[in-house]
Amino acid sequence: MILLGLNIDHCATVRQARYREAPATVGGAIEPDPVTLALLGERAGADGITVHLREDRRHIQERDVWRLRESITTRLNLEMACTPEMTAFALKLKPATVCLVPENRQEVSTEGGLDVVGQRARVKAVIEAMTDAGIQTSLFIDPDEAQIDLAAKLRAPIVELHTGAYANAYFTPGRAREFNALRLGCVRAHELGLTVNAGHGINYVNIAEVRTLPHLHELNIGHSIISRALFTGIEEAVRELKARMNP
Ligand code: PXP
Image 1 (cartoon, rainbow, N blue to C red):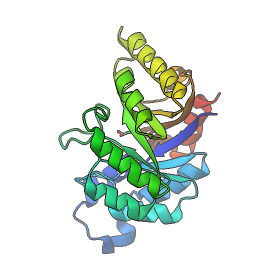
Image 2: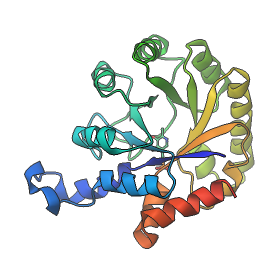
Image 3: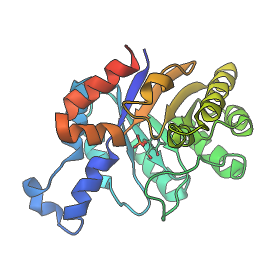
């Protein structure tokens, strides 16, 4: 069984599009609420909830994260930049896992994977701080051997392989090459004892192939499920994707 981590960032994107300036006291008038979405998603079979608290707070807010921490019954996975501010926040929050991602203020959503090789000391310090606090660290990296090997060496328990390049190449001749890179990355990470997750750009179409990657533990999926939910509601959108993940 491949597990589903439901990324709810884009529910908050829609809320912020209208209510960015509204004070929290507007209360019940503010919609859509990502916490309610998370609870419905769990009810439909999501195995965990993922949010990215970005440094610019463009979608998920700190208050959302604390409310999720109090109310969800599965696991909270906090995606975050590898910074002292976010490390301090995560140590207070104590989610089940943190996923270290690169952050670039111009990007619409996360682009390339984290450069563990280029920021070895920073990444190592965060992994150690999290491990001491009982929080597992996942590194969101490209399916690149040097990055995977270093993730294992730094004792990150989990890697999330970036499926974005594959998803972008899906309808092009480059798809087979990108898929093969992911396949080799999964094998390598598994051989080194890492838990293998994957995410970014996974949808109701490419899931048929993504699910055949070896050793997959969990897929983190956001945009396609939130988009589908506009038409079917979140519960049906989650159930449908889970059915395609594990037919
Ligand atoms: N995994 C990571 C690390 C991400 O940053 C994101 C969002 O950009 C996702 C998975 C989910 O990607 P998507 O919204 O395309 O499903």
